[in-house]
Length: 103
Image (cartoon, rainbow, N blue to C red; front, top):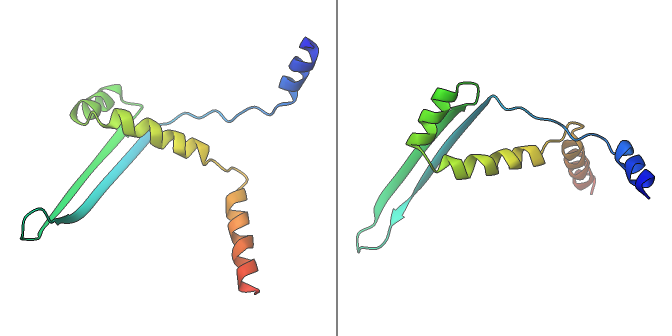
């Protein structure tokens, strides 16, 4: 039984290993305040640059914008999960579009 498990692990392709150097985040939201009788526009913009190679800079940015501690790990996970080195997603999309055009 143990040999089968080891054999299966040996045949499993290694998962990609990532190392991140830099992240940039830009966020903008615009809308209207309808709570009073008068419609008032509002807009909020924020951005962050995270240099993982410069710990002092990274610490400064995280201290100024602590919400990044929740947001960045989720975005990095999304980036890793969407990693497609063989471009299978692009190939599928092109095929789907070609099929639609041939209708």
